[in-house]
Amino acid sequence: MIAMNTKQIGDETEARIIATLVGEGYSVSIPFGDNDRYDLVLDTDDQLLRVQCKTGWIESDVVRFKTASKTTSNGDVTMDDYDGEIDAFAVRCKDNGELYWVPVEDAGKKSTYLRLTEPKIDHPSVNLAETYRLTDQLP
Image (cartoon, rainbow, N blue to C red; front, side):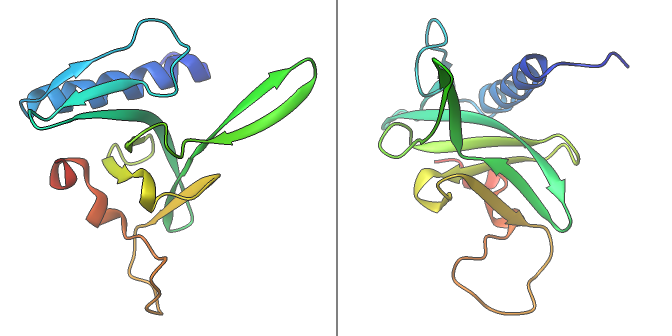
C-alpha cells in the first residue's frame, strides 16, 4: 500500500462520503476551489445542506475528529470552528471504515468524540458512535 499524505487522506474521505451519499440517492454538489468552509452541498429535495468532510481515527474507545480548522497567516496560528458556516460534519473513520453524520450543533468546538462502547455513566454530552452512522442519520 502506498503511503498517503494528509491531502490524499482527505480526498479519499470526501470520495467515500460522496459515493455513499450518491448511492443513497442524493444529489451532491462540490464548490469550486478550496476557499469555502464546506466541502460539499447535499440536496435533500427540501433543503441544501453545507457539509464539512472530516477524517476521524480511533483513540481508546472513541472515534475522534477535529471540528476546527487551523490557519497560519504571517506566522500566526488561528483555530476557527464551523458554527453558522456548515450544517453537518460527514466523518470517515480511517481505522474502522465507518461513516458518520454529525449535525454541527452536536459537535464540539475543537474536537468531537463518538463513543464506540456504552459509557459506565449516563451523561447528556456522551455521543454514541452507533447513533451517528451516516446512512441512519441522513435527512
